[in-house]
Length: 163
Length: 255
Image 1 (cartoon, rainbow over the protein chains, first blue to last red):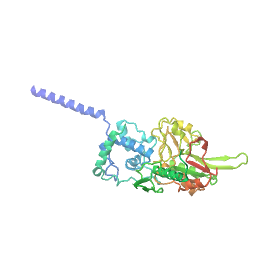
Image 2: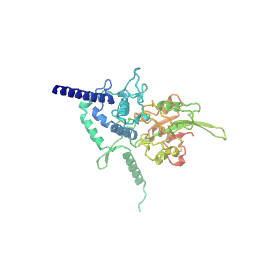
Image 3: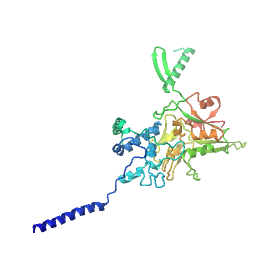
Image 4: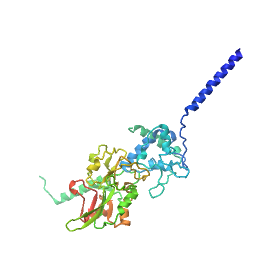
């Protein structure tokens, strides 16, 4: 009798757990975008966690500096982001933001946050011409180690910036 | 009552000149009574990318209407290629970055042709009417639209006496990285601010001297030794609609 009861219990437990697992699979959670560092780059201008939280403020700050004061440092510029974070299609051509695989689009689609930058800005690096800039990799390498204080400073500064 | 003396007037002028220079970014150090060390910035040296613009420069253009020829469109083509705009053939929508104008004297039939673009006024009416501050004048006199805060109301287009601004009606992509432009915002000649910031000349000026007739001169109106200032000091030049008092940075010679 006891053995039979244990058997029923086991079946019940198995059934409920498997149902839970199945439920989780069925709900089909959207996979988080996979982040890979661009070729030749060891790190971004700051670590990933910092960038995830602060990139919009950094871009906003830089845009005002450039637009109104004519400060055109490359490091925190949108152009530098676009030149480095390139996703290419099968043909090896950089994809535009209209493609959900684009570096910016992937995350913004996942987070359901509308992206306005590319209403005016170009979402791919420019292929040719004098104005096309090659990603400045040496400026990036070893930033996490060497520039951690600079990143900290930037974080402190951004906290004080009005949203 | 003070008595006028030539010596005092001379000293006054010297003092004013000194103050002007001090205001124009000249580093001064007073070493002692009557001894002052003044370090002049090299006007030819390009500004470093991390240095903000200041009012020591006032960028301007001088257009020689005698050299400019009616059949030449080099400046317009250069601007279009540099900044990535195209004319869609509808004058109601067309970009007004730069356009060639031909004027004719009905009495004798004498015609002249010259380009008109944003005149980069000292007192720009477009910035007066802008409700968001998107229309603004940079410290070095370049008048720009900050498209990040432009709401597309087009008051500036109505205020501009030169019809130098236009509105983008269609969604765009593949813009030039240095010249972002998009639907719902107003745009105009930027005096190729991205080129000026790296020490180059605007695209129209460069192309005019290469493929055109060398009718355009770009330079610093504040620097008496610049080519543009020398020309303005030597020859009669005029601003279009100078009567409006907006003091354009674009001047015309032989017009």
